[in-house]
Image 1 (cartoon, rainbow, N blue to C red):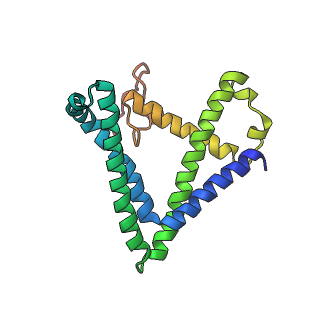
Image 2: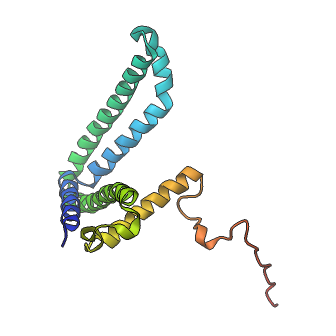
Image 3: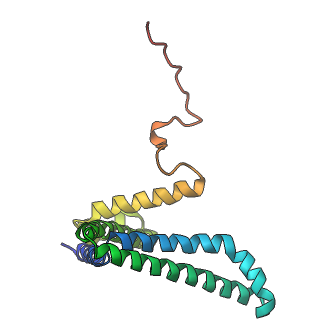
Length: 191
């Protein structure tokens, strides 16, 4: 095992333990709290900034305060709900199931976190070290390298498709013909 393997396993195990302690309900609702922050800032930031600008005196200051108010209230309100409902679920008869599912959610969250870190590390190394073929052996010889390489590539593909406005789920581009390729006519089925 290399250092990459140990760091990967520690992060995934830590996320799994946190998932167990918090439970699935709390983990999912906490994730939804982050989504609520994004939605609140996207839809209400401009209006609240304009409303606060005369009170603050500058547009920049109003924008910062509006962001802090929206993000803070959305996140802490969402976390309050997540912790309350999650605590009730953990203390109910379904508590053990909630905790077991929390471990699975924690592992998935840990894998995504490690993969994103790996993606950034590979971007830096590939940029300064001469590309994919010049990656250090402590990375390429690690047991977790194929998993992290595949997962980080999937994250990169997801972001790339999203930026281009292509379907993210479903519509696999490999199975559809490109516009510049000739598509053979379909044959009629024999009766």
